[in-house]
Image (tube, helix red, strand yellow):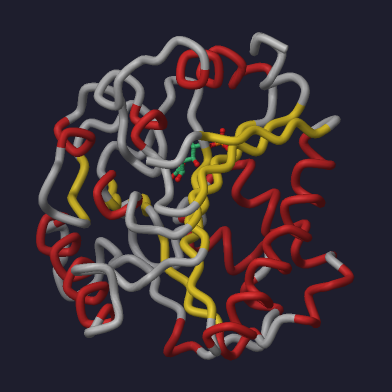
Length: 253
Ligand SMILES: O=C(O)[C@H](O)[C@@H](O)[C@H](O)[C@H](O)COP(=O)(O)O
């Protein structure tokens, strides 16, 4: 377990800009060292704010986007193209403007795809896609993710792992179906904490005063990962909490 580091930014806009620059650096370093880079995206306002900042980042041309693998940490289980889907929002914020290799962009299944409304089958299919991509060079059944991004919910959820739900207790599978999510829509697909923890670096994004309690709960109160799933989200090499002043307001200085 890597101890969480915190970086506090003036506001959410500065957090997005600085994190975009940080991600460009991390991707270019990975490409120089290993020929490619693997990033797991997250949904939500902070996650999409980061992608929008990347779209405007001066350094974005430094990345060879054709050698970036993109995965999702979670998805709202809706029909393809639904505006509420995380991948729809990511494409609008950034991806559609990048020269990505479509074969290296891995959206989670949609509810009108080959598995229909069977979210468990859809989750199992994504787990299989991860395992296939892992091959022999992966970390067990998932590829080596250079950066895994997570927005943090006001209730300390990350991805679609909500407090006390069974998905947050999963110890074996890498991807599961989620029902009764308190954040709509209720049916989702999510990577599990064991899958998240295989990433080299896990970056948690929390900006806004509505996140201050969640940040303090996890970083100061030492609450467990079932009650506070963000507490179980850490990387094998680094865990970074990227905050703004509002979200960090209740942390001991
Ligand atoms: O599907 C989703 O909604 C996201 O994956 C979710 O995990 C999000 O990152 C958090 O809820 C934070 O969202 P905000 O940044 O909008 O607060």
